[in-house]
Image (tube, rainbow, N blue to C red):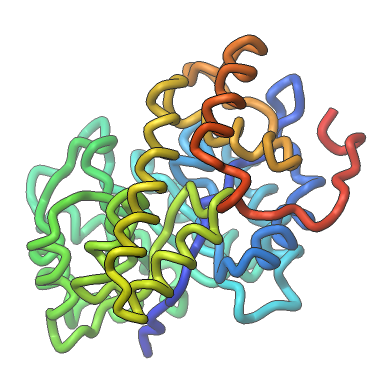
Length: 317
């Protein structure tokens, strides 16, 4: 099959939750409109940011269906579903569901409990899952900091090349620029390499990245559009300054407990996605007020995404 190379900013959406931590699919149509209005070109759903590993099969299916319905009239907006990785049978079932509801692509990680022993074993898993949807692009999600599986992706490309026609490329959430560049050059750039480290986007652009998947694209898309625009115009000083702003913003994630801080940024914009599920720690009301002040200190409102409509508060209760 022909491999489409995705470009631009692909957000990794948060999965909206009600106050009881049940999944809230009602606001997904508005979430899509919000992303689209801020120049986002696609969504990587049920990933790390989307709490896919903390959701049931039924919940993931409902989220997939909601995103498919919300975006069905917009073929330019690509939706990729993260299937998981630990249970191969579940991944296959979700792949078939993603195809059935009309999503554009699927993605898997390496199993992260019983890990593959070598690159051949990892490639075999990719082929097994992809075989049930032979006409649907599959991306490998490379995030060794969470999976503990750190094989070189250039070796995975070599292992799958010519053996898996619907293997599209890699969502690369790692800092190995040498490996990433080698993947980009493999077979004259045959495979789609999507950068996945928001804080390192500028150096990724410098070595040729065209598409990126990021959690902070949800709430700071104008900042990353600005980095890309400045880089393309050759204004490296401006691009570097904006990348530093990205780093300052991302450092607040660590200061306030990690990944759940992303939903706090969304709350500042007026798109309340609820809290993260256990065991992820959420902010207290007091911590949120301190966070709000820190966000003001970095002038978050000057580069944040903009919510151009009023969200129905009944949908987040």
